[in-house]
Image (tube, rainbow over all chains, first blue to last red; front, side, top):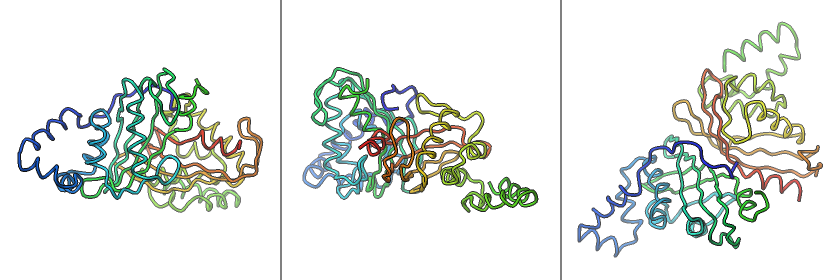
Length: 183
Length: 161
């Protein structure tokens, strides 16, 4: 399931380019830029995004995988996140580090969002990511193979940030493919 | 699902007590309405009845598309029937559901004791489980599109460990 290439047309999401444009506009205001650097980013951005719908917040976060992912985590994922990972409860910092490593280790990295379902504060996102394995991932040396991982995630959005995250995907098979045990 | 199940219970009661008893084992949610969310919930909870052919007939649209590479409506039934046969107390428990229009996302856990051979793995006697998140689209009171993601590889490793 996870080794297949995405065959669907990605759903329309906020593009990284348009998001960067918005951030640039805000940073252009001198006072706002100074405040943003002096205060914890989530305290400022949380208020900035609190009027946006849960679907818009989730779309913007997943779009950041194709742009500045570290900034995406900072802006859209609460520091008080409750994280239900692939292997059970996990720490926010581990998720951030793992996804940044994954992105840096897959040449041509891209994450496509295929669908979103929203009800109340929760948003379901169906996605697939992939690239050429050219860097070390979880200690697994580069294989040069093209690899893909699909998943379905749920985020609970409060105040413009995800405060609880669940994710399912065949991560075990993905690791096997990286290791060359299941070509 | 209210009307079809009601008719089955009535017909079963008139013709055979055994059928009526089976109908009474169907989760109450299956008979409480026909929203997409209730239909999908009833489908997953029907696994504990261990008759997936009946579940497929009732809940899976004849034109259903299985969006998992390598599977179609029939091979999905065959694979899940193998799981049911290998776990004598298998059940799917719904953890969360979200719906929008005709699509339903469901987070569930499947678990049971591994009491018979599954694929090439001999019975371990162990309890094994995995969680999954699925997206189902409902048409004509049946599931017509199905997407699923779960760490099935880790599940197999539990059995073979």
